[in-house]
Image 1 (spheres, helix red, strand yellow):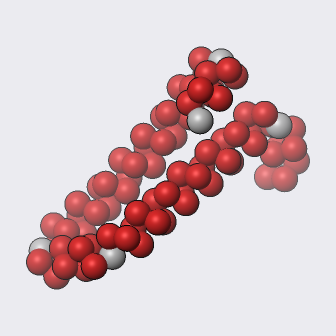
Image 2 (cartoon, one colour):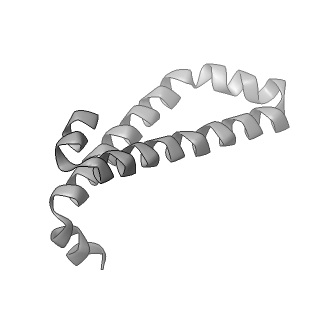
Length: 83
């Protein structure tokens, strides 16, 4: 994905990586807050749901990549749909 963004220019790389980092930052903050508030109960829930969390995270990254790729390669179509 980063290699593809590199072919589109520096702005695309910066935007793509910033979006990925921001999404992961928000996810990690939410998990830390949930664990901090729930203590042992939340830790047990996260241990049982590790597989599902990985699955959802993987699909989120895939869909974010697809969306960003569509936006960067066909901005007029995306603008027509959302604007």
